[in-house]
Image 1: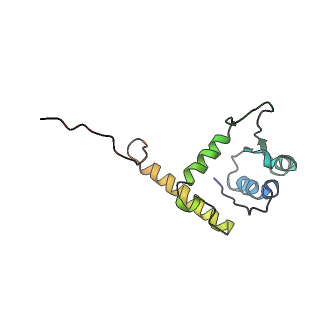
Image 2: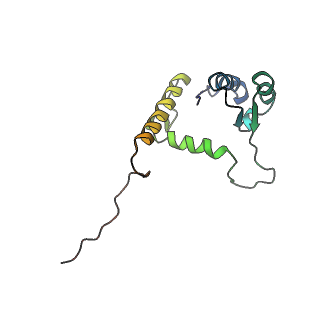
Image 3: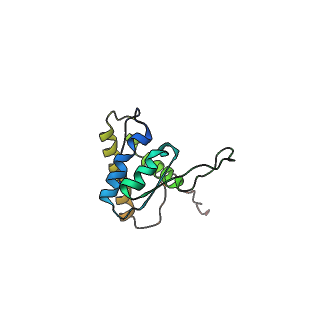
Length: 136
């Protein structure tokens, strides 16, 4: 729906208002946004008061030990794995945030077009299964 890439020296909560505002303007039907703990604080109140939307912070449980799947976060991580299949997005090669945004849009367009034109079930390319040659 929206892509916003901020420079590494920008805190999440400082870079958060811009994509939230554009999401509000471009997609008025979006009423709730999930975020990680980097966006906690005044941004939650700002989103509710200024944008009239709910910004829910997905937090890990206090008694969590080790890795555990976070609710709603898997969708974001899954999308990151989809776009890193594209070579230019496997590493941070881009020096401009605008160029990174463009590369992400290209990758997502490619993913959507492939899914729309697919005729069968999804499969990954790889070695073909071994077939037995009948003996004579």
